[in-house]
Length: 505
Ligand SMILES: [Zn+2]
Image 1 (spheres, rainbow, N blue to C red):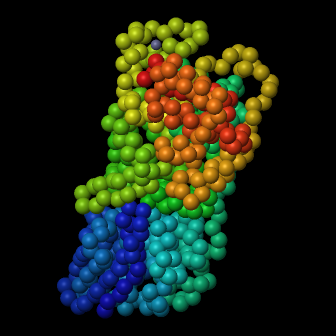
Image 2: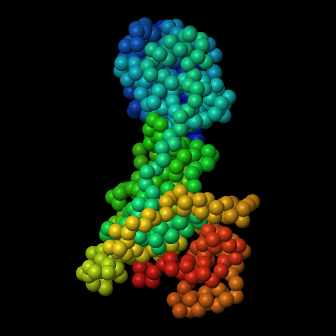
Image 3: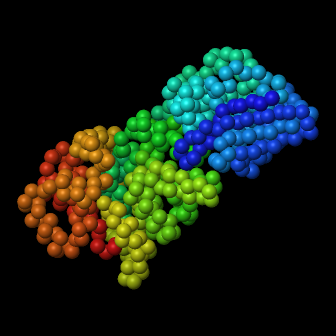
């Protein structure tokens, strides 16, 4: 007898329907799995046999069982199919009868005792079910909240194989559906008001958040670079529903979503400098997304960026250009979204104290020159704002003034972003940082007195065309924060403070 249960596989972040067929016929006892399974899937039969027995059912000794996972051209990875395989085996051996097998999908790993364990990528199963008009999805209990993010799909949370069998044989699945999804609205606890002094760096953060600009913090150890970077997401607007789904999809495939961690806040990723190229870009085992994709719609913070492998750093240029990354591995190549704000930090020199007001630097000029060489010009060009930070003064440290909170700054950021959305209506872009050269000449017109200043600055500091464009983009954002339609001299002057400091090139 043949049984068919629906499940899903993924091609990058796109879900694909998998038919899990089990055929049983009289013969020598054997179980074969076909349909491009990986080692974990092949081992599934051992887990499934134990789980079935420990749930009070049997695996007949006079049957030859063939399990086919179709379509065969997609590699099936992980232990996702334990649940559909075991249910299929029980149906095909006549121990379980189910109504409407085309009305549900299932996914889940089994323990030897029959317990159902969480798996990654559950959100994609729900998305697929909705696309295909399949009403119910059976998922491990711990993944139920994530699966329930998709509307119009009824999620049945399963703790054990026995429970799953009971629900299926009762013929009344509706009774077991999970009613609502609880989203995690826990607020991030980090706030800009905790940062004493550093008003210049905080202002840079506000401009970066408003216009989507990448920014670079340079300063001696302990001056608060990481503190600013870690609080940066708290001034970014919350994710829209559409964006949240996009973000959770990527995190779901990576198995990074935990129970109750369905977020509306933007991701903040801060990989260690020893991270490999594959870890950063993607393509580790099973072509999983890398840090650039996990930071999608959020922030990628590279603390001490000069300590990172040069090859890994250079690989950032392509996703930063395209907003997506292609991960190739063996037979498959997948595209993952990777649109993020890059925040980087570095010491000003190898010893770290070149710009310190009281500790003297022990580096020679050659060492200082070599230090920033690790960053190529084109990568450095991606930073619209460079901020030189000094240690906080004693007066600022002991001041009783409370600094502005993240919520207040966030309000201004939101307003500035709304202005940009209106400006770029009908275009591919939504933020000032994304403007092309032609956009800049269209949207960054300046008054005559400002043009004079810019001309003088170009001459005095030998500014390149690129540097000028960065300057204008930042000035545009500053004008938007100030709710000014025109870019005024004061906006350009402020933007000029955040230019690339020449010694660091
Ligand atoms: Zn030094």
